[in-house]
Image (cartoon, rainbow, N blue to C red):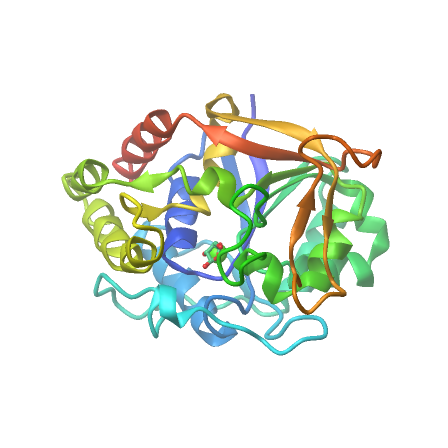
Length: 313
Ligand code: BDR
Ligand code: CA
């Protein structure tokens, strides 16, 4: 089978970085048409720089990176330096990128790619706030039905929230954009906190990354060393949750994940619960399912896949 064509829309972020590395390490299954950046964990200039640092770390300086929206559709940007550090990629010391950003805006790249590739052959993989995707859908409604699938990291049901008591960061930062995406009618797969909080980098898994005999493994170990402080303090968990790599792992090994087709709506009106993903896990609303909401994963299988693929870079 030919590899699946994807666009990674991202706000790196250590976990975004690992998701990108996994995709670039898996050319038999995934063809990365481009990487589009968005403001999220840190402002756009930094996410655009970090995406290129990661491509160069992977040995892919020819990857196409496009800068996108620098602020949510209607709200002021909320960032997460308290989790990811001042640069967004704190942890390893990595060189500034030499590869350039592509000319043109990420939203135009998304629109042009969906129009030029055969309908139903391009999957969007959002790993940050959904601003670029929603902007593309608003500006070019004809592309919506051309999307093969959206596999995104965002939201929560049982875990409720991480940035507020009821909202997960990516959805909270731009709830209006998330609302547009969830109402779009595109086939959506969601990696919520419910599953990503089970993808924990325990000490043994961190050691396995560090032991990979290339530059990438130790860098990933250092990223997760940094990133875990926040979750250890907050949740008392056994290590850093690798949220975003669940998206790219799903493209390679969907059998590692399980979930339910349910209806997911995004709260945009209430100050108290802004950005909450109301997932009808128990199917009590009568609303039509619009997403496959993932609830569990084979964590050992996921980390074996990661270590095996990162070793290829
Ligand atoms: C999500 O928010 C970001 O901090 C992470 O990169 C991930 O995409 C988790 O809530
Ligand atoms: Ca992210």
